[in-house]
Image (cartoon, rainbow, N blue to C red; front, side, top):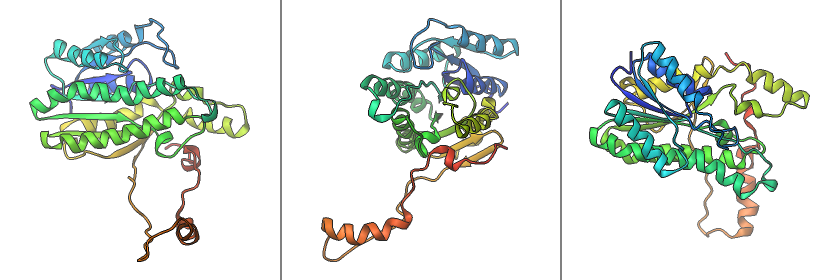
Amino acid sequence: MMMQGKVVLVTGAGRGVGRGVALEMARAGAAVVINDLGVSLAGAETGDVSPAQEVVNEITAMGGRAVANFDSVATWAGGQAMVQAALDAFGRIDAVVNNAGNLRDVLFHKMTEEDFDAVIGVHLKGSFNVSRAAAPHFREQGSGAYVHMASTSGLIGNMGQANYMAAKLGIVALSKSIAIDMARFGVRSNAVAPFAWTRMVSSIPDETPEQKKRVEGLKKLVPEKVAPLCVALCSDAGAGVTGQVFGARNNEIYLFSQPRPIRTAHTADGWTPQTIADRVFPQFANDFYPLHKSGDIFTWDPV
């Protein structure tokens, strides 16, 4: 019961990873606000509010406490409303798990402004909206925890996801910024890259033999396996952990590196474009990163 007495808001909690996190939070003793707009994979409103309510029903059936919320993370007002829902129902808020997401996969040279804005608006702006809404309450009470869902698409790369990659890597920076700015108030912030077979991942093409093999491996990834890490990070046991980037892949947990200088070049004479081309590029070449995609790095079967 690591979350006994705490109140947690989980966005996009009607399905997949979010649902798993919400249920695990409830099992750990937390009261949970289940936010889910009930939209299509691309983010179009369907009017289907049942996923959120179904998770609420599961939690109450196990003796827990939960309420549903149907506001959109993509608006400032939506973020404020879902935090207020936690205060109205349970009197406080202790943790936010920013999980809501959408996909508009398309090759960069074919991507429209709408494709880009729609994904940035939900993932990156949505994480800001909800986090910012909770911040004054965390500051006032001198405690609070954020978990933001990142992705290896942003940390490493994937094809046809310029919008998603930009949003997810932006979330890592947002998380670090929150960790730095709010450390003085006892508030911590971490990012988690989840590996899970969900509605979003199921849209990956499986036309070639290589794609089919990758998809079969992804199907082994259980969404609920991401939840324990999120609970631990939001609990008092995670009080000393902030500003980090984790990964959760079935029974594997990763700590990801963060960008730091790995090579340096200097000259007393100052650089010109030509001397950079002649000296710096060849000197650094062995340490240049190849154009890896996530699947090129995580090649082994999940444990």
